[in-house]
Image (cartoon, rainbow, N blue to C red; front, side):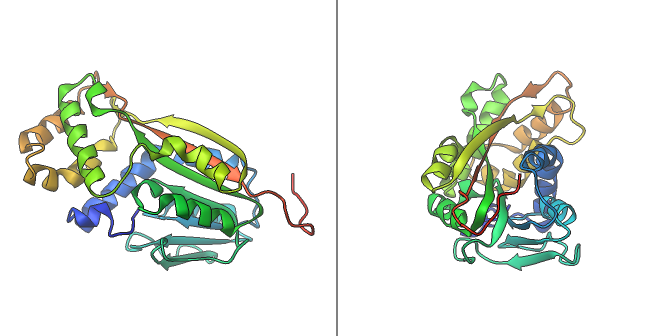
Length: 270
């Protein structure tokens, strides 16, 4: 995920290696859930797909393999982490999705993950994306819903997440917007609205906890602003090594809906 205006990682002065580590940590932890959702939509080999905020590309690459007779457009404002030659049916586009537009009815599937919550025109972009769907096409959006930092049973995590969430709010992100996502899909004229939740996990003996790269990425600015200390960062790294440390920092709310079959000459595929 990268965003417009300049991504939060860019605003925080994060280096490319740190950003890649963050993106790959997200992929490791949530790709299986995302792929399961899309598979349940009975994805076809001929589908044309749009991956918004493609990040490091794992879902775009999977879609290109899964839809060999279709086309996959992977768009991001920063495409450094994408392999443009990965597949013949993969089209990597470096673009600002808040300004980019596509012809109505262009895509059978549009997917975005951890993107809209960072965009100032998030509601309008949902409505626009709904218009890019072909009749019967699906819009799948996955966004984080951060649990209140003060509800963590760990004082260190309370402090870190409070700082992390505060900094993201300052950069224009809304980490609770996902609660209204199903309603937003319905208001955008889509039907068959469904949703699910994927509990985030911090600690618990995971070999590569996704939260260490996230907190480490934001740490320089958080430390500079006096919100956390270097000692906090070291203590967090140590805490993650404790198999008895388990916390639930967020829920990913995944919502999907379909453009109605409103074109007479389009046959519905079951």
